[in-house]
Every structure is written in C-alpha cells, then in structure tokens.
Length: 341
Image (cartoon, rainbow, N blue to C red; front, side):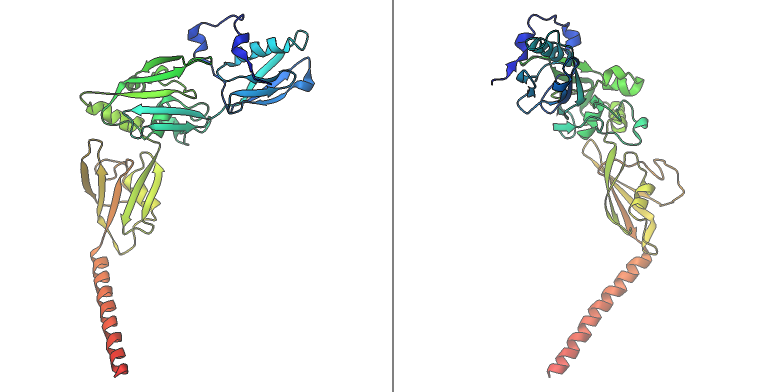
C-alpha cells in the first residue's frame, strides 16, 4: 500500500503564518512519537519515523510524516482517522527527537557536518561559566561552533548566518543573521538560537581582523575541552584532555607532576601556535602555589605543548648511565673475544 501523502490533506486546513510555522519542530527520519487515540485506546502506541520519512499507523497504514510540524501532522492524522472513526480525538507527541545534524561552513576551524544529540550537545559540568551555551536540550549556535573547533582569526562575528528548511516536502528555506559579538559582550541571547536538524551555519569573513574580537572569540567560542601535549620530565607524558582555560600548573599535575630530581622546575617551556599562524615559546618557573596569571601560570589553549626540561642532576645521571652501558658492552665484547681464543 503506497504511503499516504499528508501534505495533500492539509490543503483545506488553516495555515499558520510563515513566521510561526518556520520555527516549529519539523518531523523527520529517526523521530520517536507517541500516538494516543482517546476513543480507541487499542490503536494507541509508539510510532517511529523511518528512514524514508514514513510511519506505519494502525487502521490507516503507511503515511508520510517527513517535513511536517507536530500540529500539521496531528491535524492531518485527525482527518485520516476520521475516515475510519467517528469524531476521532488524538494526541501526537514527540517522545525522542532525532540527532541534530548541522553543517558549518566559512570561517570555522574545522568546517563540516556535525551530529549533535539533544541533551548532549557540547555541554560540560562547567557550562554555567560559558556565555550562551545549552547544557540540556537542543544544541545552540554556540554549541555547534564550539564543536567545530571555534572560529578562525578572520571570522566576522557580526555576520553569522543560519539557513533553515521550512515545513513541507519542498526545498524552501529561510535565512537569519546573528551577531555573536553582541552575544558574548552584552549577553544578548537572541543571537544564540536553538538549531534544528538540517540547519546550515555560515560564519562570514572579515577583511581586517579585529584583535579584540579575536580575543573574545578565543575565550567564549572555543571548545570546552582542549588537548594539550605534555612532554619531558613528567611522570605520565603524552596528550592530556582538559577543560578549557586549564592553567599550566594544573596540566602538569594531570600528567602526573614533574619527576623528582630529574625535572628542572625553573625551565618549563610553553610552545603555542597562535591564531595568526605564528609560534611563540615562553619559559616559566614552576610553582605549585602560583595562582592563574599570564606571567607565572597562564591558562592554556587547545594545541599547546608543555616541555619540562631535565635538571642538571638528570643530565649528569643520563650521561653516566650512557657511559656505563657503552663500557659494559665493550667489557662483554672483550670477554667473548677471550673465550673464543
């Protein structure tokens, strides 16, 4: 039995104004629904929208739900069940929304297609300290940008466009522009909309980079988790995943701390790849009781590398050990030569 095209049944129904309908949730493949027929409880139960956008319903068969809002689908199903039941009363409820797939293009660090599950966007336990992000519920514009690694140095924070599909089976879209600089400076939440499945986010390019805007973006639109490489004389060298803004001392402790007697705590190097492509190297004296400051214990950024150099005692120990290994090899070789003779 072919799927019933519900949009045809909507022709005689009142149509909501475009401004309202365009921002309502649009059903699609993967949505889990609950259908309650109040006068026919035996036909009530869960409904899942399949990959082709259809759903199998009791009494009426296979229907096309993809592209409809919940009010539109409810109205159309009421008309369909009206052919089988006298004055049907039904409720259609979204139980589990599908993952939100968003495309990010333009001046973001890693453009591409990202899947963001509702309630598990990019949030962390420290989300309350980050401007404009959602710890629960649908992902926001800032969540998506953070998942794409943040913005580049050439990003125009005043020109961020979101392209969104309109309800229906056609390819109709609307576009809105947002000012992220106003969001992070003034807390204007209207510039951090919730994203829907299929949204396309484009971050514009600025002709002349603004140093202030770049710093604002680095502090507020960067990922909540950063990856830092810790090398040299620490107990557990390697890559560390840390909360954004973690200071240098805390990163060293996460790597097991400096190795006793071998680490030169007066020579800790921080190597950083800057957003403009340059590389800087700073030297710090390690002090575990130092508060966060750019001079003594700077907050880290994604991609930073920390190198803890060897102390004089460590270098001397390695030199003696190397000499002993070489000398031991010579002694073993001479002993073998004598035995062979």
